Each structure stands twice: as structure tokens, then as C-alpha cells.
Image (tube, rainbow, N blue to C red):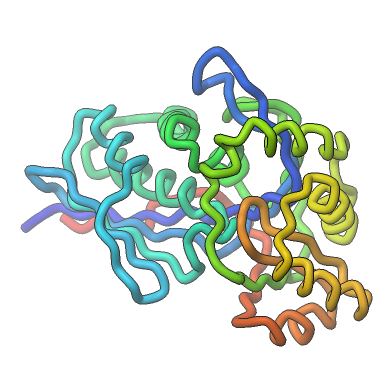
Length: 280
């Protein structure tokens, strides 16, 4: 019987960030604030002679994941990997980091690698930075909460708090993270827009994120329409970073967002990546 390990990692919605360029992936990343969400990626890993990755999102499957394949190659293991998520990919939910954390957590147990949580996160962060799929999602998703990262990499100082209120989101389509992270002009605008303080609560997080989104120039026209509707109804809201979507809070948030597409009701995660089960 083929041995199998199954693990899960929460996703992460970034509200505002600023890139920090280091000498290598360990010192490269971002500072900023975001919400670790209870939805994320479930990864099933089986022993195999060659590595293959199947990505299943919202019932649709596609083959291959360069960051995941890179991380397994660096560890010197081969496996059959299936990642599954309910949220759309490329929409600002930190799913690339979640896929890496979930997969490497499962790999660690399947192959008895005896890696610490720090080492698993370091491998995931390296793959994210090198493939330009994210900067701070791995550090955030190592645990739950609304997070504020004051340094780059997985060993940065991070404050976390855990509000009970739900967060509502709507996705209007993908926005490839690499296209923004590769643009010097976009990075300069983002750096200038950074609010440079941590949020006090969920409404304050939405407020700071919105100010950042407006000043950074990243808001597309269709996202602006959703934000305008939220403003009119007095609903705190901002753009998912980096994704073509909106997150909002408050009693009227779900009703307003439902005009623009399927609404996802999310809660703040209480924990980071973990092993679900091992099948001998």
C-alpha cells in the first residue's frame, strides 16, 4: 500500500505591504498587515518515483506547480502531490504559500525528514520569493490571526490578534502576483503608499488597507465599483493584495458584495499549517 500524508494550511489576505530586498531569500520578503483565513489549501502527498503536482481549485484541475516542484527537488524527494482549495487561485488569498506550507508539512511527515516548523517555513518562503508568487504570506500563515509583520522573512517580529467577526470577500478574477512584484514602478508606488503602522482592530485594518490601495494605484476599475458600493453603504472594505477582488467587514458587507459575485464568508484562522492524517 502506498503511504500517504494529508496536511492543511490556511490562506492569507494581505491588506498592505512593502517589499524588503535582502541579500538572499532568507532576508528578502515584506512588512505589512493581513488576515490569516480559515480557508486555505489541503495537500495530499503520496510516495512516487517521479514528482507530479495536480492543482484542484473550485472543481477544476490543472497540472504542475513550479514552486512546489522546486521545493521538493531541493529536499531531494519525489512524490505525487494533489493540492485542493475552495477559493479561486490568483485572487489575493495567499494560496501559493498555503500550497507550499501544506505540501511541505505533509512531505516532512511522509519521508520522516524531521524538519522543524521553522525549516518547513523557510523552504516554503524560499520557493515563494524565487518564483515571485509572494513575499510575506508564508510568515503570516505560520499561525493564525490578524497579523502585522515588522520585518522580512519567517523570523520577523509579528503581532497577532484574533477578532471573532467574519470577513467577506468577492473575487473578480485573477491578478498574477509576479506581474506586480516584477514591476519596479509598481514597487515604488507601493513603498510610497505604505501606512507604516499596525492596525488596532478589524475596522482599522480595513481603513489602513483602503488608504494603501488608493495611494498605490493598484485598484482596477471593476474593483473600484465594488469599493464605491461599499462606501455608499458605510461598509469598511479594501482590495485583496495582490488580487482582483475586495474584502469587507460589518453586518451589511455580505449583502453589498453579493451584487458583484459569489461571496466567501471567512473567519480568522486560529492556527497555521498542520498534519491532518497519515495513511500507511
